[in-house]
Length: 536
Image (cartoon, rainbow, N blue to C red; front, side):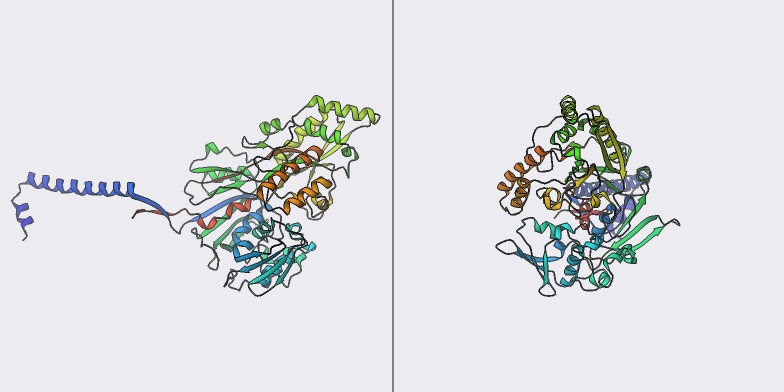
């Protein structure tokens, strides 16, 4: 019998209770002291675990990132495919800026375990350069020559110096030759791989579920063990698909999804959501009405274009249709500090210009058809523009809803419109060549206003050849003024990217997006599981 037991036996009943109470109190104090130490000296560390579910309004159609322009496909593809820059070990440019040597990392593999080599990169470049593939990357890779040096090296030659070329490399997803090499480009969308892709991204395809009517309801991904970058901390990433934002709102309220993002006004009252964080992310976009003089002759008159531009009340559009985060678009150059010519909404001046045009042309009736994608908020914007134009004397303004998803008959290809309400999304805000150079007036170029200006062309070409940032800023300011003074389009507003996510999400970087898929550039660092440890 030890000494403590002897002493304890000599205690009275009351003394024993006091003794045990004292011991319990000491233990509780020690526990509290440990808690204080952890609270003051501890830090939370992300660990692998959990699952994340993203909500999307829309449907996956062809999850092949170099072929599909469907926003849902593009958004999902960055999780399944690696961009070329992420596969590179090194790259070098020649002194004249026309030749690039790219070297891949050694030991790269596709999600099915097959080797990923320079042959896959060459196949990808050749595919996007194939007109019949209708690739959204077609324009940015035209005139580029690529050749194999070894299984890891590719030599790329440009027709002209382009200081922004590495942006093309950064944004190009690579697809597997061993999967698509034997399939004609026109038939890619017919293969099972359009929904069950083999990629090299942080995640791989696992399964999907659909209703009897073919509507895909969910899509599940798993961490890719062959991914060349940092392995994802979230092992399971899923998508749930909805037909409208009302369904998304309900799913958020019931916590059936962890995140939802949109480049458009969502109509969701985020103040009512509990357990979620709302991030408003800057985006490189602007919406404008692009005038097409090639279809409607009255738009050849610079005064008519000026009148149409100055009559639009952008502030009314933002107040009545858009979210408070929307901002008026200063012009085609989305660089802070680049000035634009001062322009204000002036109904009286616009009406005077229209009246003078009518007098000069013997009161010829003025009719304009405004084409707009089948998107509700854009149709609402079009109605305001219709009223503004008719108020200054335009006799008839017709609104025509168009299908932008049709690869054959889309207005982006046919250019069959008087005026088009549409948004431009710039991968590099300094490079306006794809959108405003006269060589891009026909599909797949993106010069939607059929704008032609020798001065503007020379500026865009010089900007691509200028490595000094300060000089580029001066050239961009000149380009901004040149385009704005010609009124080829009425620049309306810019919208941020809105991302709603659960408040337990860690590692999310909200810096800047050029497209929804940019949201997932750092997805490997996202986490929803964490532990607290004491700092050393």
